[in-house]
Image 1 (tube, rainbow, N blue to C red):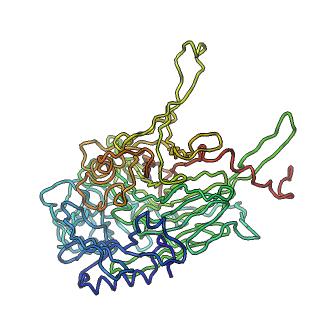
Image 2 (cartoon, rainbow, N blue to C red):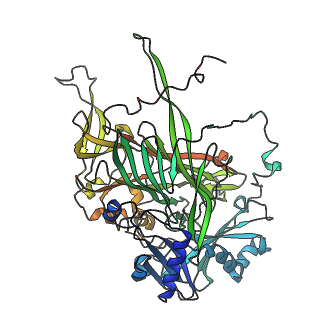
Image 3 (cartoon, rainbow, N blue to C red):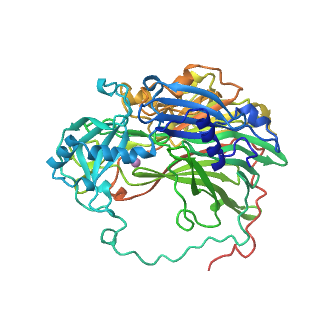
Length: 636
Ligand code: CO
């Protein structure tokens, strides 16, 4: 029984939603669900919800008839047992619905059956088609005449010598098949280069490759003999003054709702909704087989639907509580991913410490964090999404990037767009650009955003010795002014404030976003990708809350011609002062692979931090008790 409007959909709710769609004649024999998920109630309805009242529940379905290619966007209300909206989609304008699970199998079947593709493989000595793996890679939108009005993917192939072989080690370069998924055929074959297929095994789980296991690693056991310090009631999580609700969506993965902090009995809202609703991975190899490689892992592949079932002792260590996630399969039937969300507490080193030279007081407190995470496998890469809440009011996001590089044949040092990671094996340079959506509500909905730069001051009457340093604080006034780049040389941060609520010092309460400044989208402004990934051209956007503004690259991303999403939202140019604002933050690495990233990549990290800045009156963690006696002592 669902008792909160933001609870994730249950299996029964998926089934009921599917039945209603069928009763209304919307499901034909060839209908597939490219997305099926919770249609969240409007914010005012959620905020007005009182426990004990049954919440209104709706589902959104993106449907495709895989024979006719017809698309529709349907919202069905479980509460009213009715279709709320039913809109046919025009792919030329709206974009295509996401990749289906069945497309992974179909793409391979289609190229295997294609004479031209088989001939291109045979030309390279690859005659055993059963050993050739094919990836359905999203096509982007380049305006080519023969790509109009097609639901398509581009397919690159890899050799898998046997069923245990790591196929990514053996890319077949120079051949790309463009596949129409509705017609079920290859409509264009690119066969440009003949490069040798890299031969060295990448089987990192084979002792022949990894070598014998190293020794000397003694056990580390994490124990919490009295259990963890958080409580989980359904999807409501409470820990050390923090409270929030956990959600999960096939497209966005983990969603956090109504993050608040109990400050001496006052429950103070901080973020209404937080998620990482998009990421794009643009590759930088301009060659004829690869210039189109850029994947929107959320909007095109549904990063949440691809979540892993986590394993205690491997993925998560210590006193873990798991939540299952329910998504739908291509047929709209519920599929439960067990142990998809991991919740636990971690020691996080020193929280604060001082040894006073005058009073002799020597005090140390330990920091802890509450960790809420999930892992998703999108083709070759694996991404861990970690949200951390700390005892001092800090919120942090960390993405862990691991898995396998996307590989090519290495073309040599005169092709500066890839690095050689194993003999003859290239890995094109690329970016991982994530977008965080932070729907803020610091002590209420009326929030503003300031840009804060630090800088020195020229010598002058006030600054005769030139040591002055100060800050410039600029209120971001409208959406068009709020598309911002980080400036690490100025220590640029963005502070969200509630101008109507002050702390004990009379300052507006605030939280500051500290970015990890990395390059934004490096594609040329004339590139088709630039228009499709417009969100990634700025580190920060601030928009006025609009329930339709959910996805930074727009609603339907797959094959979308571009122009949707954040640049379009910001073009509305609404006033964003003292109103309900949403922060959007782009972050992530630009990655030129190293040999050490092969054959499986040690975790790389990226993320950002939100710190209270005048939200509290002083260090909110003075009341953290000293470590229990017996735990602190000098020496062994
Ligand atoms: Co990478």
